[in-house]
Structure formats: structure tokens, C-alpha cells
Image (cartoon, rainbow, N blue to C red; front, side, top):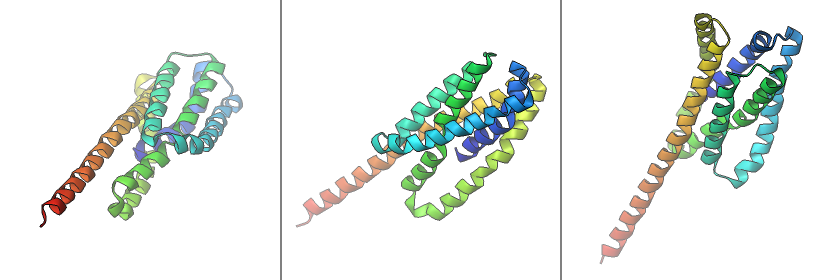
Length: 193
């Protein structure tokens, strides 16, 4: 998942100005504000996420964030109004703000004995910033517009939504295994003379 969220961040950073120039006929200096808007709302989302995550399940928050992000991202494919596109970019930034930290912390919670290995794998996932943009460029050239880039980012967001469900399933399996182990130990304790 880390590879894909880093790919989304870097991909949007690379794509937003060209996309706004193509879709809305903006000048480069004006279209460049789209990147700033994305990162401002990403910062606001990270700040607000500290309070939201203190009250709600991180997996539920991840799932809701990815559902909202995917819905507005699909809507982005069909919009050409500049103000609406900038609002969508802000929404995507806000809801993608906590994805990296949620995935990283959940991985460490689920596999605490493998923390060093997981940290290494997560840091390797940062290579998503080097993998996703070339795929976006190739697909945009094939499609003939920035919609190709949007589709690649949309696939990354879809995978992150899948991860939110997979993390919950893994957490449930771990919880069940812990309960079974506790039950087994209590049965052994009861059966001892």
C-alpha cells in the first residue's frame, strides 16, 4: 500500500499542472497552484487526522477516506470547470493525508516481531514515487490525454481501498487467533489437577 500512496502523491504532484492546463486552459503559473492546494489540504488533513484517529478506528477511517477519494477522483475524469477541479484536488489531498501513517502503523501492530523488516519494506515502498509516474506518462501517451494519468492514479486509489478491507480482515484473523490461544490456555489450566 505504501508504494501506491507514494505513487499517488508524487503522481499528482507531477500531473496536476499539466492536467489543469489541458483541461481548463490555465497558464502554467496559475495551474501550479493546484499542487500547493493539494499539499495545503494534505497538511490540514494530517492535522485533523490526529484528532479523528483518536476517536475512530484507523481502518474505518482509511476505508472511508479511500471511498471518498475514489468517488471524487472518478468525478474528476468528467469535470472541466477549474474551480470544481481545484476543489476535487483539495478533497483528494485531505483524504490521502493519513494513508501512509495508517498503513505503516497497522503493519507494525499486526507484526510487531518483524518491525525491522517491515520498516525496511515500507521505506522501499517509497519507490512508488519512481514507479507510478512513468506508468502514468506511458498511459497518458497511449490514451492521448491526462486522463491516462488519472486512470493510473485511480487504480492506485482502488488498490488502497482494497488494502483497507484486507487490513480489517487480517486484524480480525489476528484477534481470532489470540482468542483461540487464550481459550486453549484456560482449558489447559482448568483441566490440570
